[in-house]
Image (tube, rainbow, N blue to C red; front, side, top):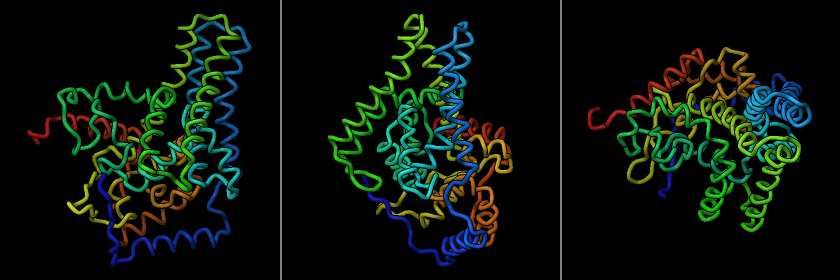
Length: 363
């Protein structure tokens, strides 16, 4: 894989100015960059959404349709934990205490993921090489979905605007079955890590044990406590994961795979046109930035511009930082992408899938 070099030339000193203003905001208001009681309250709420419906399913005699509905609510809770707790924690912004971030970041194991894999894919590859084909794995969906104009085009992509929605729901269940094993093998082989490189044997042992405990909790307990056929238990398990996967996938796509974001490539020497911070402005988009409901539910991931420039700041601050970032980009004549509503962003995303599904020969 070629080495990527971001430009070091920012003659207008955009990021230095922006960083100074953001630092000033926290200093003047005497607040920490990490989470506060609002985030801790949300953590309790999303964990409740995840576990209480499951506890009811295991302990209360209910008709099958009611159990299915409760497992779908578990899926909403699962996505909520991922966006509001796990995400901030594994960026080191949930708390100013390292052990708290590690503890809450380990919630990814409840979601079928793995801390090491997620930090490499998200913190290292996605946040460093945003929307760069061959480096940002978040825009690599294999051959079935074409997220980038630089990806190979296949005839089936004509239909991706229709079938992609149904595939999005498979995200977390893929973590549970195959993705984590493939990523661990690939990342260890490439020597990738976020922080200290893990002992390969310990990483493999952690991965295997976490999967055993995961399946014991989400599949083993229903087999023991519920008088249901295996396929009925599988339907509930699948419904939970499909709900979570659909929410998580869609939130990501609205930030990066939309018409107003770029997918630039380096030149033949691996050099990018812009500095890292300015690159984030060209490749990232906000959606429904003024909606408190969307911000609350998505863990501030509708403020992707702010998140990508300041990934170590908790999402509870993004609404306030947005004004600073937006004014600074305008001052320096740089892009600040956003869609005013989530509905508009969804429409634009599927329009982009339609565009990318057209044979590039005819573009």
